[in-house]
Length: 172
Image 1 (tube, rainbow, N blue to C red):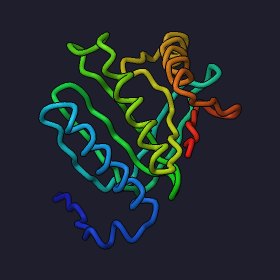
Image 2: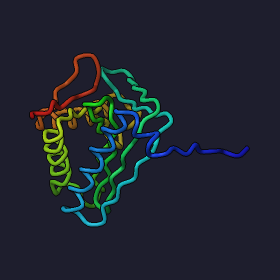
Image 3: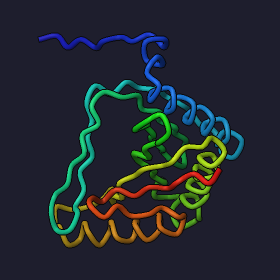
């Protein structure tokens, strides 16, 4: 059976205001990071369906995104994936510093750059802390996610009382 991939025009994708938010944030972030790091690329992708899973209060939690525009910013040092949830809210789907560059403050610099950009553009940032190397062991996964929640809290991300989601409210 042959798989087919639907092609979208930029006009078709960007006519959706939420996608336009992701496009703008991703492009500006890419431009800023190109000034700080070598070989930074930007790849927009239409995600037909997507979700994120996390452990929350001892149980599995899942959020479905449906179709959306994902902006992937990559370098030899890091990978950042952003979507938009609304016209005002960016979703930080993932931020990963490659193993050989960890413990150098790069993740902190990347997050500080995103928070500053959000303030300048008037965007909130939403995220779900999930440790990449989480295991199927709920207690280990929760412990790893707690470290991330504490880290994001240090950047003024606030916790949602009903889900593992956290949000940074733009200070503009």
